Amino acid sequence: MNFKHAAIALSLLLLCGCQQKDDSAFIISTSYGDMKITLYDDTPNHKKRFNKLVKEDVYNEVLFHSVQQEGVAEGGNPASRDVRPNRIIGENPIRETISAEISATRFHKRGAIGMRNGASSEFYIVLGKKTTKEDITQLERESFFKKGSAAIEKLFIQHQDSLSKLENSGDSIALLKFQEELIAQAKNEISAKETWHYSDEQIRAYREYGGLPALDGEDTVFGEVTEGFDVLEKIEHAATYPDGRPKENIVFCIRKE
Image 1 (cartoon, rainbow, N blue to C red):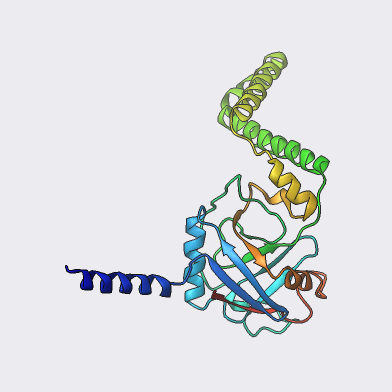
Image 2 (cartoon, rainbow, N blue to C red):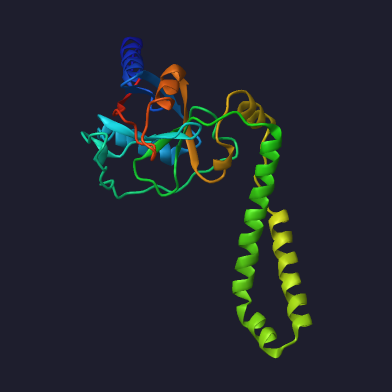
């Protein structure tokens, strides 16, 4: 290939590259204005799924059907399209679901975009509230207790036959000793595993901007709002019915930036 042909080939390659749209940057156009969002590369399955849903126009004129102040703004069900505010929204027709991609570095700060485990197309934007360091510490304790209780229950089920035999024998001392051994084993298993701890960055973000730290480790955070927080605030303060359904439809569309 001579220099001229190489230059032409390079120009075409650069041109094609410039024409490709970023698969991480999107605009959510709502009744209140536009928000720019960015999807994370380290949640690739959610990123790929979101791109697919946008391409298929699933998010074309659908609703934020639930808005909870200091909670989340949730939407993305195609069955909500053209449904009046006081009408029931039908079941989501999209059956394909997606498994969680939970990362300790992605958390539910204000403006974070998340999906519940097993969701199909519905997603939420975190509103939340400002949280103190003491609140975070309490959440860590509750998380440890929850995991510990689950581990104890699992071990008790695994050793149900042995526990039943001891109970039927009437030897309450032996039964209590065995139960204590199982509880200690569960505690050691949980302590040995990596448990959820909030980083300094997370604590600072929750204290300064707010969010929903209680959801960390439960749902997948796969993106965040980068511009248009004034729009998010308008959505948060929209008048709603007791169940969180906005009294006036909040319609949105999503397109690539």
